[in-house]
Length: 360
Length: 71
Image (tube, each protein chain N blue to C red):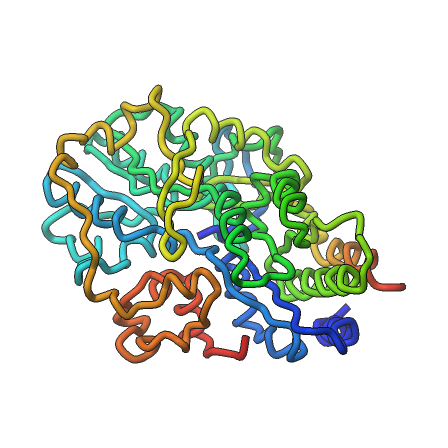
């Protein structure tokens, strides 16, 4: 089946329906959708919103400010993180702007950071990412490397989905679930959400045909629900080649050995119950927040005035599309980003800037 | 961030394997998975194999679709 045929099937299915509002929850899905102009394949009454599926984007400024605070106070630390995070601005600075004064390194994998620690340097890894990335951080900690500490900014995605649906203001009819988070958590992780909200969900892969297939399945189920049917199943796995019902059980266990859950803030969403991956007390010797506790004694969160007009938070919630932000491609560009949605390669603003915006 | 790329396992030296991605080779941790063998395809995210994958990807999309389209 080709994309065009699939688009025709979607159109046929959606014909005459009231607006159908779908949301995807992964920056890589937004990349596929915008890169291949998939919104232009959809009929007018099928809207595809972009959700909070970008770990760099949802990391609140307070986390970044804490990391800045740590490296400002300690000049004996090598700070490692993933590429996008190093470029996020706060108060006119980014981690990269500390280079020259501090040792800031971009790593591909947490194990590249551990290798630096093994050479005898004190390394703090600024760990970001959802369930996809958390097992790697957990595994690194379980290896008990010397001189190695993690500033955990990891967040659990499933509680965020729960929170987003509980708000109800977006009137979402169906969800495209993140493929690689699902690789770890499995199909089963979404069952409570389906039961609670009765909103259909499809776990999807990242090829254009995967996304269009997910949309087709959703439109078909939503249409059935609207016509008074009660479909038995509201949760589908389109990404069977990588996602199983149980997920990666070993990775789930490793995560649970190292991380607890706490109520942490997300950019654009506020505090989400049980969404923060805090390092458990029995691994406190690897928790940068505990090991360098004294550094944070005088820490005071401050709001970055430069981000006053930035609407990254609203973009992450699917309330607006990037071009509705007054800064988009004016004072906020890929070259000089204001908010993280313009920094990360998974940020909706960055993706729209790269490929050009399309109707939602 | 949650990007994961499929690669082919060339050599296993547990807990590390050499994985080939379209010609480029990289060391990857495989201890999040059970029983990884040379020749397997794995999805790799930040230097970790997070899942084994099937090679015949397109075929599986067709299979999923066929359940929903009256063919």
